Image (tube, rainbow, N blue to C red; front, side, top):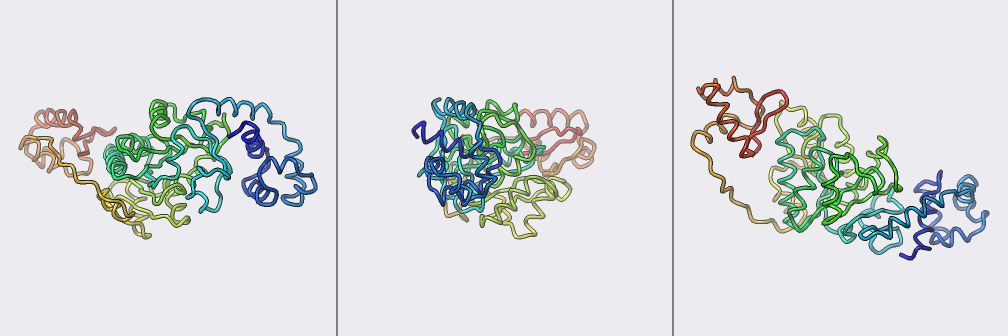
Length: 358
């Protein structure tokens, strides 16, 4: 995109008080931004009203435009507008598509066959493992995995997807030049190199609470469906699932323990009609993708470890309860659990209980 064209799009979208609906109205009535700014104030006011026309005339964000043009000059950075062929076709189907997208990385992924994977930020060890495993297999099956770069399930989904050819898209709630949370800086760098980091927000936008629910419509909008791994009964994750349903996307949910608060949201979605899944191949089949062959688990465990894992089940359990179920002493159990933890077969929860994760 030429600097003059990019500058016009940036000026249009950086004008304070001019919302997405007004931006689209101007584009529809007057044409590309260059024509909008060449039009008379009367013509602009007739399209979007006097107040919006005055806001455009009073634009004072030249420094922000210059900063964005400098960002665009850096390798791998892109501004995708509603007029671009690269603009994701799936977003044109949603009620409120963004006028522009700031993209770091592979623009072609925006039009790839995609599935969103979302879940709790304070996910359980099992939830993190499940999100990563599903994302890895779905990426190997050819789907691009979309998520929000949050801690917990989102981060695990991105990391798992990077292991497959489908790769991943991170839709963030800050400017594309800022990463939140900071703990995911390295992950964001990997995504920008092999996938794509996407934002509709101007550069420099900090982590504002109200922006994260807004970006969720893009996560679901880019995707053919949304998979919810873990969610509390009242959580932001369910906002994405609701938006997916409103947008005509498939909603999938993974069931969990009836005792876990982070399973309540998934069970609620299933009762409301979401498709219960316990295998990534179910999703690939539902979306018309060829399932990848099952990978055999070649990890070996001793008979005693196998018996202990069977006694654990998949709900959190304490050492005392395991001692009652297995007849083993606390010292023996502690040694076995440590070995299984080192093999990433169990995880220690914050309350000291153990959970099987593999």
